[in-house]
Length: 433
Image 1 (cartoon, rainbow, N blue to C red):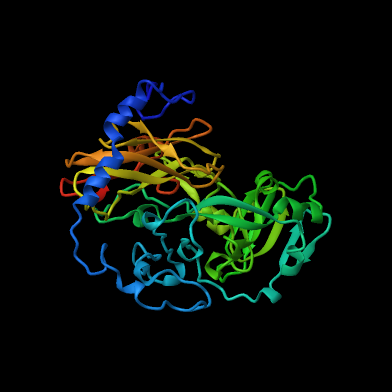
Image 2: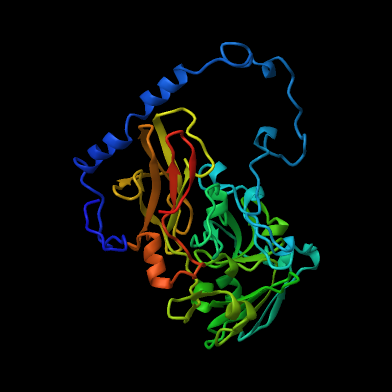
């Protein structure tokens, strides 16, 4: 797209969008003509039901259900297949994650009932009236806060993504039947409401030598992580509400820490304790799991930020182009822990040619961004890919670039370009490029 790329597929940080009189025309040749193809498909639709126009459907002849049935609203029964799932069998469900059905979602906000979950010893049942948050260590005043105390502080509401460090493995073992839920389902994007951690640290009085925060959860695993003080004072939120309602139990009710752009395990759920220290606390979780193995046998520690990443959600694995050849919309999600998504490129030939997609508003820092591109399918095989570029100039890499840099067995923080193969019969499956 106007600039040379190195052998790993990276684009120079100064890459600019192509001139309108060249790339846009090329894009229209490949991707354009959406309306005509769609209308042609609709006009050939065969009437198969008495409920299909111009007939009057049955549901227009009956009185509908009353309000408050049930009192807490639920999706239509025709959407009952859109649920969280486990990707793989686990010895115990108390340590198993559930995966969000991204391929069935729209926009950028993940509904509370479809947010992925990951915990280490089950979901605790916590009475908020008896829950407390203690802040101690290198502070002037060690304080204990009730939930009512916390909700008296000035609140903020911000939209951010959260992604598990283990979301998307590096394809040592693959399954052609994988969907986006299987490959990328450990990511979500919500509106988070709470009090900035910096506000609470100001209340207790942070000592000058306080450089790290140990956060501990009230679950049976007592999950703990160490957070640099710079991030704690930047945009970290102590959260009590998600998407306009109180946190759900699996998302940390009644209180959690949320660390924007960092790997999901940093956002400790069921938060009960914050200890300020002058160095990392080196918890068991941090020393045994949350490191990145390198090709030479060494391991990187404290690689917190989730790099730029994207995935096409439609068409994607497990789906079918049922309308035959013609026009479709390619759509998906992109995100970066470093800030806003600047651009997303889409390819239909396995990365040989790239075309700039349209970014739907809003485009927010450290939030999911929806991208779209019209595509005219000629009925032949195709390899669909997307590539995210964030505002720092970082470009989402190919699989080989990550393996060359980190080795084959480094699975966390894997953000390589994802491929979906479209067969001539319209079936879409997982594909290793």
